[in-house]
Image 1 (cartoon, rainbow, N blue to C red):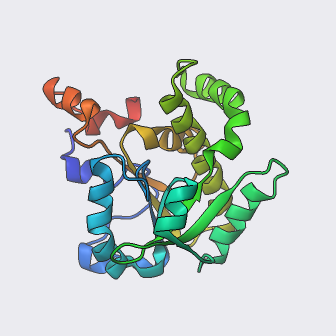
Image 2 (image 1 turned 180 degrees about the horizontal axis):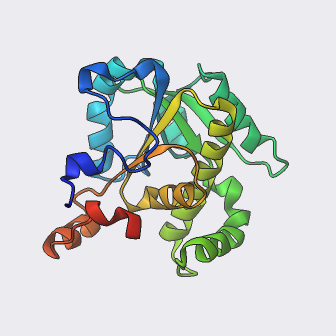
Length: 231
């Protein structure tokens, strides 16, 4: 029997037990949200994330963190740099930064209501890996990207860095706390695809918003959430 949307989103990875809402052990969980528009105002997803940040921080505290691309001007004007409160996050960032490839990863508090933590990845510092990561995506998922599509290429770089980060993070965390990652829209999709294909032990959620992709899916009556395992 097909699952309803709410139920299908609670058990995508099979890693986490089902809890009642008032029993959710937040202290044993880390919640991340990934979006191209974290600290980067280019569309409506920025507003969605910004307006729900305070209530999420109120409920999750230091166990909640947003992730997106680093842009120098946005960081200087919207983010107050600080150290991660969780040592495992610091170690995962350092694993990327000190790998000999001069990658840049930035951490801080986003200066909006709630002041959520953010991890921002400098995709320019990792662009030299693009051809190799395109090969990885094709080998593991049979997904190819147009050569001159900068938006798709940048999304792949960001997704590759995020999947790399979560591999390091889950290695350092061990069994606890469990990791939940919510990916927003197709620009965050490569990170989800690569994390799942590499069997990184974390629960995942994907939301497609009212963009062209979302409109086409609705118009075609696509049973999207019950076919995520086939995407």
